[in-house]
Image (cartoon, rainbow, N blue to C red; front, side, top):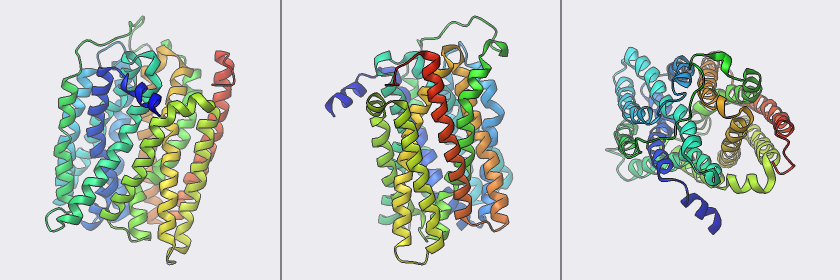
Length: 413
């Protein structure tokens, strides 16, 4: 345990500052995940209509991810991180304001540009780490960066629970979302401390020269991401509605569940380098994701007996099991993909990964909207996600085998 902590302490200061900046933006993202849709429901937006609005967040990323990936090639990333630290909190505040007063045009615009703003740091963070992290702590740096999402969920859930339970007359969903959004500006101040001197790889061709990339490797590496993210987009953004509508958990109680799962996700994320070194990609990725698929199937099944007294506790248990199992694989799959495609493809792969996540979530949000309008149950939607997850896990298994052949690695990979 001590050696694990020591390796994290050895991460370079520039990477630590990036991760702190990421953290405060992820606190906003987590708060939106935990309570925004419940807030919209209470403000009179039915869930299919809310899904239509939320999809615009992902549309913004689709529009800008690929151009951004080409733009950052051979350029400094600090300005983009700074811009994200300002723009994400600003558009977060506008989103809450638009929902409060039903300014739907403003809501569409704000969600679109929120996605663009959050995309700035999402696309930049992994290339920044690959450029500036010490090679001996690269796995730790990537894992800690991914852990900011779970740590943000822990912090956001704790804030929501404490404020809503101790002073409920003052702190409702609206006020809490405003407070957390304003707190997101702290991200900008950490970004300011990042040194203006960055390790910038030299470019040997024009940024817009698409023939400079190994497209066969890139496509093979990104197919499992596309499959899994399409399934995830049907479930993850709407999980709060599942607990609210099916199991009667209001936003303050669901925030506690979110924090609890975030704790396990965080523990899993920081343990990833140790897990990878001990068991290799094949066991660490495919086994954890396979167990996560099983947990999601069991979670979906709780809708079938939701009136039974033990249905809600079981749903919480399966959710808390599924989330860390699925999320702990993310740093490993990212490292695998980046190693698989090679150095010259990394920036474009980072941008395309973000575009795939948002593009598939946009499409999945529209599909979810249609399915709910057709009175599809949550359990059926979640089972569709489980099937897609399973297909993605199988593809990762074959990708790992191909990576071993390409790089002539031994069984420890």
